[in-house]
Structure formats: C-alpha cells, structure tokens
Image (cartoon, rainbow, N blue to C red; front, side, top):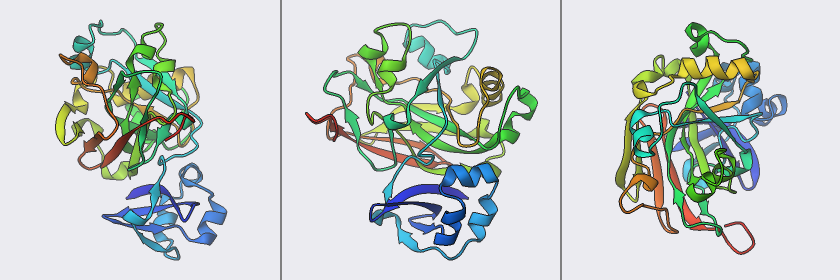
Length: 286
C-alpha cells in the first residue's frame, strides 16, 4: 500500500493513495492515530487499509506534506555510491558518512523547494529513503529489513558552498525547504528486496542521475545496523541512503538549480517525487 500525508482545506490528514486518488483516514481513525507516525508506531497499517469511512479526494486537490511530518530524526548518508564518490574527489569511507537534516528543511510532493538567497550553488541529489517501522537498537544486518515500514523518494537539496565551509555537512543540508520527500511511503511488503530498486533524477525532464540501489557502498542492512548502534531508531525515523553520480556540482560547467526548474526523483515501485524550484523571498520563505 501507499501511505500519504496531506492537507485539505488547510487541515492536516493522511491516508492511502491509489493512482491519482487518495482515500483519507476517517475522523474516528484520526482521533485514535493522530498522524502516520502514530499509525506506524502502532503497527496499524492494515487497520488504516480497512478504514473505509474517510473522504476520497483527487490528488490534485491536496497539498502534500512530507510523508512523516514529525520524525524523531532524519539521518542522511553521504558519499555512498562509488560514481558519486569519484566525481566529488573523495575516498571510499571506512564507515557510513552520516549527517542530519531537520524536518523544516523538507517539503512534500509538488511543493516548491527554495533556492536560498545566501548562495547560487543549489544542487540536486535524488535518493531512496527508508522509513523505520519499529524501535531498533543494536540490530544485526541479517534482521535489519524486519525493522522497515517502507520506502520513499527523497531529494537531498544541497547548498554546496555552505556544505564545504567545514568538514561537517549540516549547514549546507538544512536550508529552509531545500529538500523534499514523498509522494508516498511504499510499504515494505511491496518491496521484499530494496537492492533491486533503480533511481533516476531528472531536471526539467532531462536525466541527470541514474543508479541502482544494489551499488550502495553501505547497503540498507548495513546502514540500519550502524545507525541503530549509536542511536535508538524509532518508528517514523528516516534514513536517506545516498545519491548516485551525476550531481550538478560535478558537471562541467556546474549545473545549479534555478527558479523555474523542476526536479523529479523516480524510483519504480516506490514513486515519483516532483519538486518545482523557487527563489527564497526577502522574508525568507517562498
């Protein structure tokens, strides 16, 4: 099933997507489970599927928000595909390169990402994100897939000059509304082997990145094992697994996102995330 979070007439909700239609959770169901994070925490996906009292909407009438609007943590993995490592002039790391994103740095499907006033070096990174489904600590890799609720598309928008101010990536990865995730969570039962997935990033319809999840330096079980060793992973936590080669910074000349561009991250079986680009306003928002 495909789980979505959205707003309708300014009211937050969630439900199930089926093509271009969305069946929202009923008022009674939302009273019991306030958001998708609560549904996942309770293991109530099937109850949501059986809940038939909610309204049915056209997707075009909804404002999509990040599929987990309120995660406890968003962990992102850098330099995790060999072509991207090579194009960025880095060494293959001995351990996963993990940094954090803040929830306010992300928007949902079809919502604008913002090119900040502070930099012209706004870059694209298409990724597969993993949504944790239950508490996970000291997980062994052979059991890691059992802890996954599902998968979604992720656009790790990067402000390259700010990313390079220091060895820590945090400033360049957390500008307001610089990244996106969605449009849905494809539940883990639909994707028994995520290593078979393929990812494509397009800018204005042109393919810029293409990669296979099988080519990750640190695969998904390894990332869950590593991250659950230093932190307790909670239901709804997000791990963005890294980006393939082809980013704008590595091109000659560099390709930076501009207002009016559209970035799409497509992973067959998971979804197609669309992000129009706007300039940040003087007030600091779109």
